[in-house]
Amino acid sequence: MKKKKILVTGSSGFVGTNLLLKLIKDKNFKVYGSIFKTKPKIKSKKIKYIKANLLNSKDCLRATKNIDIVIMCAANSSGAKVMTSTPLVHLTPNLIMNTQILEAAYYNKVKKFIFISSNTVYPEGKKAMKETDSRYEFFFKYHIVAWMKKFSEKMCEMYSLNIKDPMKTIVIRPGNLYGPYDKFDWEKSKVIAATIRKVVEKKNPIVVWGNGKDLKDFLYIEDFVDALIKIIKNKKIKNFDVFNIASGTSITINKILDLLINLENLNGVKINHDTSMPSLIPIRKIDINKIRKIIKWKPKTKINSGLKKTIDWYKNYLINGY
Image (tube, rainbow, N blue to C red; front, side):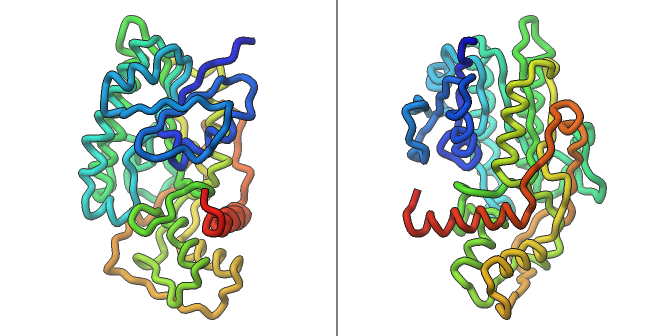
């Protein structure tokens, strides 16, 4: 069977890097990755890197030429501090990139377009959110990023359902991903990466933003990538569809911290909850019954095991770099 040419945009980022690691082991794909300012973390003869500014329409056209499948991982992303203080940084550049890569993919007759969206498109609530629960009611701190993601999802739907010669598009809404190659710098890191760094560096006291009681659905990145590749390969998915990829189980930040402290044998360390610092949605539960049923996937990595793997990787990164 002829290999499918697959392009991973944002291939030097967290999701893109982990996706490339899996794709180069798969004989079904000829792998391409788009990069811009950040150097790729995976060096392999099996990957052809394309330097492209996705804010430039000509670069988008060049990157998607002769490509069969596009995975849109490129995004301007951040943690709670940036999302709370300067949320507009997520709006314009992401909308421009999403619009132009979709247009270029369609022009170049890409057969399948996968858009990595976000669980911010769901409302605040105590129930586990199904794919059909995204109805334009967003948690107030997610207002801008959620509208950006939701509009981008709608653009995908337009290319699949509202034009004469449609392009197959699939929207992915991940849980809170963590694992190797995540951002660990203080400005951009999300909660697990930031907490791992505090524990590994033996901060005392360890400062937790908010009261630590926030419930979140955390998924180890390798499980996410396995599910994503299953979706890419599935030939029975509709011309437009949406899937949650998450653990299906929510856990508090305080519990995550307890697990990390135990893994690093830091019993006795002081914990300070700083309620003046930004925190986000208090409860996020995600329903994964659809992907279980249609794709026959479920997560394999338990939270304790995923945290241990991430700590080990981070320690090696501190010593050896990427």
